[in-house]
Amino acid sequence: MSPKWRYPIMLFALLFIIGVSYVVIQIAQGYRLDLQKKNFAPNGLLVAKSTPDSAQVWIDGKLNTATDNTINLTPGDYQVDIKKEGYTTWSKKLTIKKELVTTADAHLFSTFPSLRALTFTGADNPVLSPDGQRIVFGVATSSAANKSVWVVDLVNRPLGISSEPRQIIKNNPDGRDFSKGVYTWSPDSKQILITLHEKAQNVKNATVERNFLVDADKITPEAQLIDLGSELKPLLKRWEDEKEVRRLDQVRKMPEKLFSAIDGKVKDIEFSPDDTKIKFTATASATIPDEIITPLPSTNDTPEHRQIEPKKIYVYDIKEDKNFLISDEPGSSKDSPTSIIWFPTSQHLFMIDQGKIYVMEYDGMNKMNVYSGDFMDSFAATFPDSNRIVILTAIGKDSPTNLYAVSIR
Image (cartoon, rainbow, N blue to C red; front, side):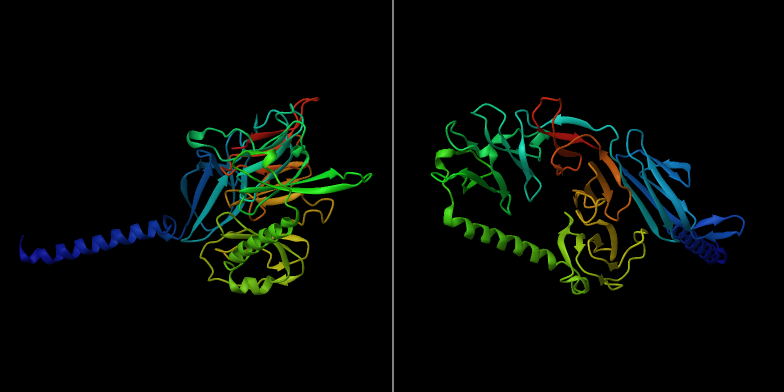
C-alpha cells in the first residue's frame, strides 16, 4: 500500500471504530434512533421478570412481550400488567427514566390452590417455631397411644420428600394428657415448653400449673418428664435474654439516622429474612429524615410515607431508603388485618385479613388473595420454600381439624 493512502485509511478506520463504539454505547444506555429528529433519543429500559416465567407483559393495555425480556421505552409513566393463565395478575404503574433500568419483578400466585393433608389424626393448638421451619401441635382425637404432642417439619427432606409428623412425647394411657397443653418454643426452635393446668388435690375447683421442657427433635417418654417448678423462671429469663440479644443484633443493622428517628416510637420491629427491610408498628408520631443513605438512580416508584403515625404498620427499605405505609395495626379497628408477617421471599408480606389469606408486596402494592376457604383459629403460616402455606381446617362436617398444605405457586 502506498504511504500516500496508508495514513488516511488508518484515520478512517479509527474514526469508524470510534463511531461504532459510540453507537453501541448509546444503544446500551437505552438510546434509540429517532428518524424524525435524525438523532439518538434517550430511552429507558424495562426489565420484565416473573415467577413462574413466560408470562405476558402488557403495557398501557397492549400486549408487548413475554417476561424475562428487556423492553426499550421512551421516558414517562406506564401501566404495566403481567399476566399468566391460572395465576393472579401483577399490576403496577412504573416510571421509566432515560438511561436507567426499571425492573418489574412479578411473583404470581395460583388462582386454583390445591390442598394436601399434613396430619390425619387431628391437630390442636398448632404453634409455629420462631425459625418458621416446624409446627408443634397436640393430638387429642385419636387413640390413647397417639394422644400426645407432635411436630411436623415444613422443610422437605432431600429429593423433595415431605416430612411426616413425629410424636415427641410417648404418652402413658393413664398419665397426663399433654395434647391439652399450651406450647411455647425456645428462641432457637430446638425445645418446647409445655404448660398444663391440672386439678389440685384436695382443693375444690382449684388448678395447679405444671411445666415440662421437651426436645423438639426426639421422643421423650412421659416417665422422664419432670415439672420444672422453681427452674421455670430462670428458663424464661434466659429465653428473654436470648431474644433481646438477637433483637439488638438486628437493631445494630439499622442506619443510625433511622434508629435515632424512631427509637422509642415503634414496636414489633421485624427484619425481612434477607435483612434488607424492616417492618415495624408506630406507637407515636415521628419523621424519618430524608437521604439517610445516598439516593440510588432508580428506585421503587410507590409513594412513600416518611411521617409515621401511631397504630400504623410500615416497611422501611434499607437499600433504597424508602418507607411505605402498609396497614393499620392488627386489632386497632374493625377493618384492620388479623396478622401481618414476612413472606420467605423478603419481597412480600403474608397477611390474614377478614378471614382470607393474602400475599402482597413489601410496599403495600399487589395485594393478592391466595386462599379464601375456611380455616380455623386464624392459623396460617408459610412454608420456607414460599410455594405453599399451611392452614388449620376440617374437611367434612364430622372430620377433626388437621393441618393442610395449600399449594399457591
